Length: 104
Image (tube, rainbow, N blue to C red; front, side, top):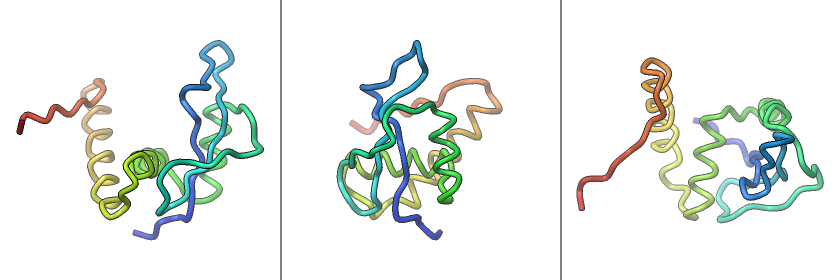
């Protein structure tokens, strides 16, 4: 898998359900956390279009978010596979996937 160098996301704490917009952030591959951008508040459709232009789909965006939160990029391809499989199962069952770790 060829990994883009970055993707865009919405900083969820800034998301306004009334206007359906939020602050756009940049997540750089290999880095923990995120970077502010000059794009301001935008819609989820703007976000999808911007990510599409740089080769990032919804699954890869979610994987970038997870890797940046934990600062561990070594399992990116595994995370992409798991998210893709969960989304496929959810789309056929009309449910939201939830993983429960019962190994504890």
